[in-house]
Image (cartoon, rainbow, N blue to C red; front, side):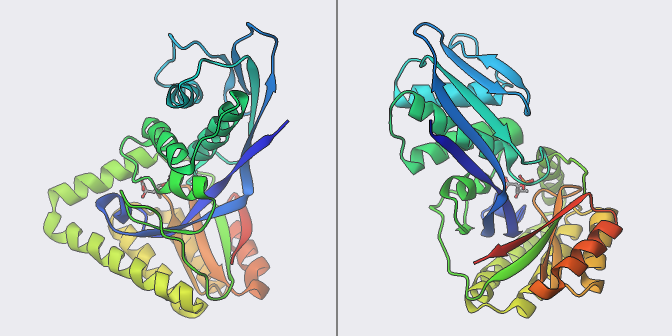
Length: 310
Ligand code: PMV
């Protein structure tokens, strides 16, 4: 039995602006994962997808795939791309990634599932095909995703991402320690992306330059990450957060938690992902991580984690 797994992801810089063609930087977050394994069933059993901690158990029927069932849609995309009929197999999916929280749960689940379907039919799928299929599944969740979630999760490496281009791997000059805090508030990325679009369309003179400024900041952040300067990177995070607030995708809680992290000694803090809920990240000295975590939990964060990017 092969267990396929896919990590959660965290966006370090550039969310929202990435939808408009600016770069963004994202990393895998391995503490949270989606896994899928496939076991053969007797001939004629068909394909059974069991995802009890995500949404239920589903029998695949090629002629009846509800458009809103991301698991069955992912399975059909994989089987069609590989040009094979459904296997007689049971795929067991599990995920520890909170849903609708900016961790890329949908992309991680689809990645693990498509890999398990590929194994079940005894085929090989290259990474570009997998990335393209997971992107198709992402459209169900997000409407018009930039593609950053599926790319960082499928590649399972830090990426500098520009929409429509191959991801660029980059070096991390010295390890960076982040505290990740989940607000416990599920927020719809589709809605926040729509809200930013409405702003940009209603007042392009104000918001187009702001999006471009975020892009410039992300290019600078890449260089700072490559140089390995945490203090400089922290101030870029603070600036990116301010600009996301100007785009109306922060919230009182996210702003308060960023302030709490800075008070507790973080180099910088910003929301991460779609915003208005979901996650924030704080860059810290490893020795200060526990203190910053405590401050974030005291400030109302539901859960916190420490992640080191190398
Ligand atoms: O999936 P989330 O909530 O981490 O947000 C994805 C990042 C956005 O830039 C807001 C949307 C996108 O498609 O890139």
